Length: 127
Image 1 (cartoon, rainbow, N blue to C red):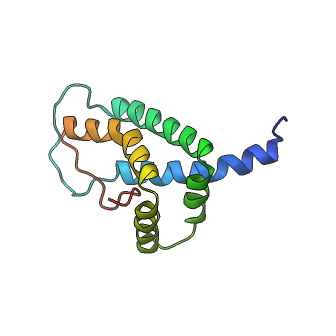
Image 2 (image 1 turned 30 degrees about the vertical axis):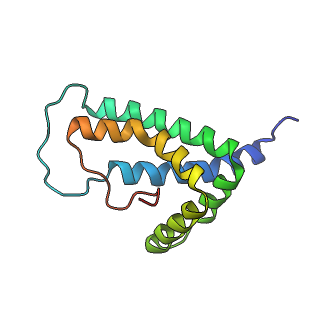
């Protein structure tokens, strides 16, 4: 059955919101004034490439796991502290989804470690 453009937009909006939230958390440094590291392949373009790959993988995961997609979509509009608590509670009850998303996110963790970048203050994976 072909997807109408309004259905496609409706399906894409929650994904765009989740992707934007993840990107914001991933790109925000945990500490201000960190010294830049001259490691190879640590440019803004490298970060954008790794982030794009992770975002595409998260999108595919959420589309193929509607329960997780519905959960993240339902976080829209909640205060950040309530989101963090909800994410922890959700993943306590759904450890496989947590493991899956941590694996999808691993290339960004590896990039940050290799390039001397700190983790965001409040990741959206309930860590």
